[in-house]
Image (tube, rainbow, N blue to C red; front, side, top):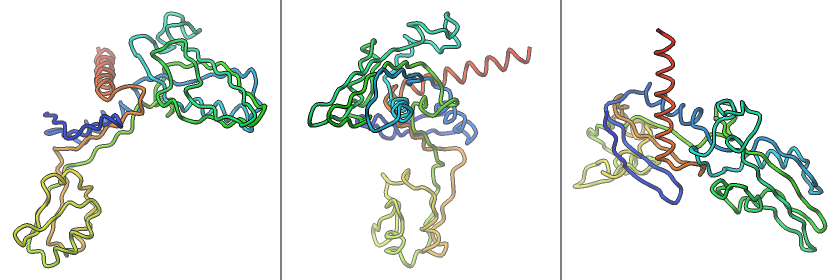
Length: 264
């Protein structure tokens, strides 16, 4: 198997890479491991001291739970693997406090208003709104974040992930190249030397929709390559993409070891 990075988006913490000589089964295993098994921090419990906002406690707690929190996997343990057996300690819990009172103009409570006891573990997007307070309203609470996995709740999922087959495109005698170009939703084609060709930098954008096949009456053929794949990972911010992929491999290796031990 070979891996080649096609594109890096540092701003959105996303990576697009090419995987050669693999299989759809392995690609799907990696995708599911990332979404379901890579742990991150997320708020699980909230104790309200005061809430005079327009939202019920449950609604505010739901919004807090969905805030991505920077995660240091070396500093925290899953509650079930912690030495405290999940009772709650500094190794498996992160406490955050929030106390905001609105003045006469009102205020929007944001993620950055959550004060973490661990400076490394704080909300990823500080400007994310939680609730708007009107004059005289207040919100005070203590929240507890723990490590968890996406298979239990999506709030612990670290990234948006997908993969697709690399397309194999064959171009025959196309009588309506302009229509083929205009009907392709991702702009894969262009005309060079009077002939319809695939743009070199657009091949991997093809999503195998077959619009070009239909409009050309079969003069263009598109087939999925069953051994080569385009894989995309966009982190929600709790972990970097490289760390997500490394952790996914570690989780997969651990599961394989458990399976081998079970066979003995």
